[in-house]
Length: 318
Image 1 (cartoon, rainbow, N blue to C red):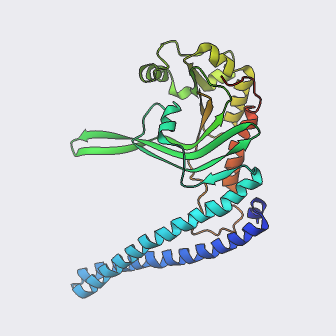
Image 2: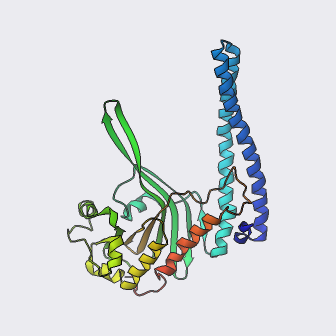
Image 3: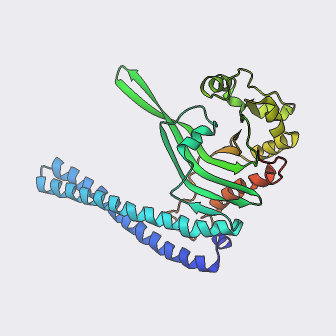
């Protein structure tokens, strides 16, 4: 099993125990869903045929199944937390002993806003699965984030609400060992010049209209648009080597990344569509593919330190 490569022998016993728990929870979930379906069918049959007692019995069967599903969900949530706390946590140690995971923590919403990575304040925000550690001299963390905004329209049919993603994926933060005087942002070209208007209107540090940074790397310029409140500082950060490193990092990603350099941190947004570190309920934990994508994500993010050469300290912190 490929899973073994991520775990030590003692954790394999935990894996086996969790697999037994998963099978029991799956069995119960199938029975409870079956009760709901059967109850709904019996209720429809009873009321359509005019036999009220059968209809009422069907309704009671449906309600019982629904209640059991709700109660069982708590046990499933605990099983998934155990998977993260016991197995994912151990697998992380196989990559780097310093790595830890806190499944119920994530990037604070205010930190997400202060990163300036996205130009909307979320109406709905969720972050979980905080992974943190050290690579050489660099402290870093990353977590899954799902931020959304709400649109309200008045139509002839009344008030309609719709939800749209601001960002879904992983936000990475690392110590840059320098307290930046200003803020520098590297965004996907698809955002266009509207980024400038938003920054200068809403962000105090971008008080000047001259925020666009013109760089000499044409390939970098094809993919990214750069804004900064300090033109000189931006060029110190975005050296030719740094721009090549960002391009290399972006090449490994399916979707274009975004970066911000603020205070003493680099923030990187990796857009993703999958929810990681989740234990399966209907597929075996012993399958080869379990944890493979999770660990591939961790290794990919962990390589940011090396790719951007964050352990090379060219500045002393002010």
